[in-house]
Figure 1 (cartoon, rainbow, N blue to C red):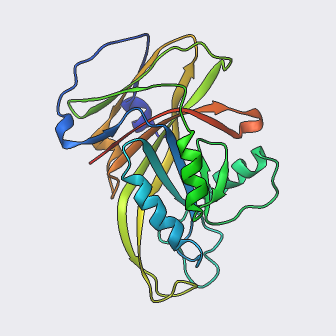
Figure 2 (figure 1 turned 45 degrees about the vertical axis):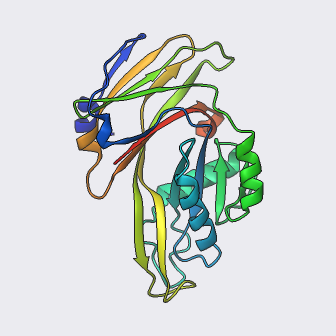
Figure 3 (figure 1 turned 180 degrees about the vertical axis):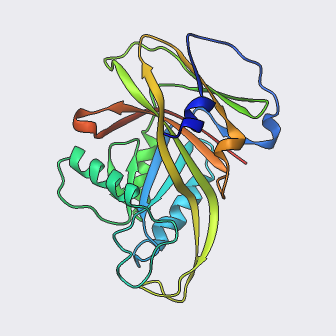
Length: 247
């Protein structure tokens, strides 16, 4: 985490109240039933249907969508313009957490747990019907600052990681080479960065203040805050709560 970013975040423990101003210019999702994370690639011929389905899910008020473009398809003639090694590493961590040796695209993970082939819409919709997040997070915007309130909760979990994920809502890409050569494809919820901004303890309410303008640079127009259970050996666990802001 950069020094500039550390100095920009103020973390205060305790239940605090605040007035919300200026929210009309932003779209907010503060009480979703699910976070769906898609691992995809512009070089994968099986991915466009999953990408299109994620775009449809992104329109729902009760679902937060995130697309991680992996880099292991890049050697097959086309380098994904949004790909990053860290996205592939996150996918491998999910696989290790579930005891799997292999990863694949398109893979869609629901709430940090169950995974599906990203184009299997009926199975994913069925999973979403029964989904819920145990932590209901408060979200507000005041003077270009995102206020996130994570309440205390009786739970078996001692603490969880608070992630800030920056993303781009939509982009269109002309694919010049590879399996999708000649296609103009639309993408949504494209993750740019994912970083730890704090910890949450079940017995303490936590409030965070995040400066929106500094985080929404270089094409970024969306921010998601995830509370994700800590698992052994640094592996991702269940997502317990989430909120998102976009413009």
